Amino acid sequence: MLIIATAVGYLVGSRQASDTNDVNRSQFSTIQGAVLGLLALLLGFTFAMTLSRFDTRKNLVLEEANAIGTTYLRAQLLPEPYNTEVSALLHQYVDVRLEFYNAGIDEKRLRAANEQTDLLHRQLWSRVKKAAKVDSHSITTGLFIQSLNEVIDLHEKRITAMRNHVPDSVILLLFIVAILTLGLTGYGSGLTGKRHFFVTTTVAILIVAVIYLIIDLDRPRRGLIKVSQQSMIDLRESIQKGYPY
Image (tube, rainbow, N blue to C red; front, side, top):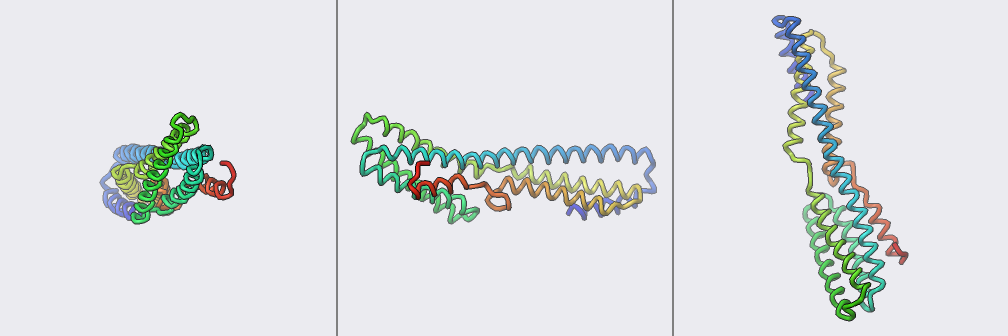
């Protein structure tokens, strides 16, 4: 689309070249520079938005892994049989949280992962209520409840972060401004009678690459750039080996 816009702009500019004087060409160059600056500003602004959202999703994975690890350690201080039951549920919980990300954009798998997460939340809460009845004044039970609440809260935060994208209207504006910018570039080449095909094609490719990078960062579940789940994988291996996290 950008290359077509450049070609159309060149054809229009070449037809009007004979009716355009040097003053008009100078004014057009100023307008063209302003539009290029606007595109650069939009690209930089949108990239900053997507990068911030990407960093948030990445940090939430680490925070959730740390919270689950802390909860697992505090579970070891619960009285039996709740110690063993809660530890087993947390082990299963880590697998479900990995499936939550691996589900990608598959709505069926994603819904199943969320339902399983909610079920484990209820099971964990049921165990901790029973443990609290055994000794309602236990400090360790209180600390476990605190960390379990954090785990539940982080699940909701990750769902919110997953749904938090750059507005579609901003992406659409990027496309429109990019097309108009390349169209004006082709128009300017038409006014001068010199067609810089290699340069305009290179610019078009670079603009598309940046826009693609923005979309990829904004939707990490469907593109090439993924949010690393290594901290959650390390936690699962640590729990499987019985090592403290």
